[in-house]
Length: 277
Length: 272
Ligand SMILES: Nc1ncnc2c1ncn2[C@@H]1O[C@H](COP(=O)(O)OP(=O)(O)O)[C@@H](O)[C@H]1O
Ligand SMILES: [Mg+2]
Image (cartoon, rainbow over all chains, first blue to last red; front, side, top):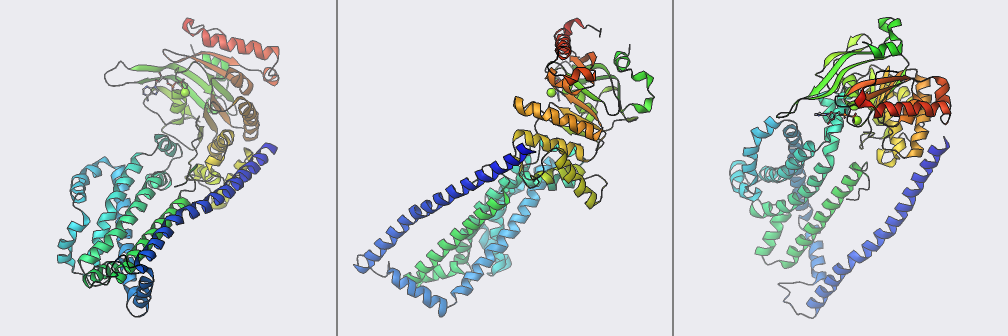
């Protein structure tokens, strides 16, 4: 089978060339992407060393770094950080799992969709933050109330995209499942779920961003722990350096969350042709 | 009146020797608000064990519909379709099917796709592995077990689909224009491969094609269908000496006859 093995080599070769080129493209992207942050950092340093701005409103970058070190070594920054992360992860996982399960059920059964959709649509239009006061009354100021609110926020985009993904499964694959005598469970496991995965992954990445943004607000509004609490407390005490530490940290964590979702997406969807996020 | 089976000389064989036996098959589609459309009218057809039969005819004459009825994907017809002595009730792993689009699941590797054909077959894990591997090799895709479908060329993907159709070891393989979307060179190549696969497996084959050349080259018999309503108008026996020489006079003569039969459908000439 000469033609076949030759084709195999061609595929291997093409893949190699492509990855070399994309590596070069990646490093260039990296360089271009770091220009603007460096400019901003430099202007910030300049503005504070020339005292253009009152340090109470904008402390120097070096002051912020010192504040970061103080918070890390003498205060409970790590603890607050872990509290926030814990809430986000739990809220995200519960919301996403419920959304995928119910989304598949609603996708497969029009009846079930009709059953839940009026209720869901009403709940969906009340923002997570608007739920928080009531839920805090029920569950108290601790983590459970925030986890619940984040689950709610994660749930709806994922639910709707899962439903849409299931509805979008190609009729031809359903026909194939009949030819192969698949059971309903096998149909879901082997065809419906994988076919809906691209749509689900998009919503998971989006929802992860929402969840992280929301935890900061929720912690600011209730409770005495977490990055959100720290940032609002810093504002109240005019600890601008600590406030900036929290802001940078929140931004970095958000960036890391989005990158890891992107990497997970690439890995899970590696079967897709020409897929590049 | 049972012309097709006479042509096949099938009445001389005992009943059990027919792999597939179709009698008085009619199929109509009713679309609400419109006159029911008679897609197949009174079709009779037998396929013997190990026989290769091709179905040709103008587009829209009901070839795919006939194949889908035999596969058990469609139902709700008049007449009888018997497979190995039993009426067909829905799809079964005893009849493999290959569609025009390869229909490999894009999220499974080639090997996993072929394994899908055994998902509900009664084989041990070891037998499954062996069957999958031997069928990958049968269609010449050794070394591509872990390839994603989008990494395969059209011809390779279609070979994968044939392997999936064969892996559960059906006694009849149904193919609906399996090479229709391929370029001419790949098509000729795969025709040759299909012939050796057929010889290796020794099973019955029913191939729908619009390529008369392909039909004659591959088949023991070529069944010509006509349209409005869809029906079988002529059956050609193809001698092995004719098939042996694809550029020979006899081959071309027969090709001419088949093409004429396809063109003279309106006159319903019932003479072979
Ligand atoms: N599900 C269906 N509902 C209504 N009409 C159909 C359906 N499937 C096929 N037909 C009609 O039946 C006829 C035969 O179709 P088909 O078997 O696909 O033809 P062929 O494969 O020979 O080109 C066509 O006129 C087509 O429009
Ligand atoms: Mg067709």
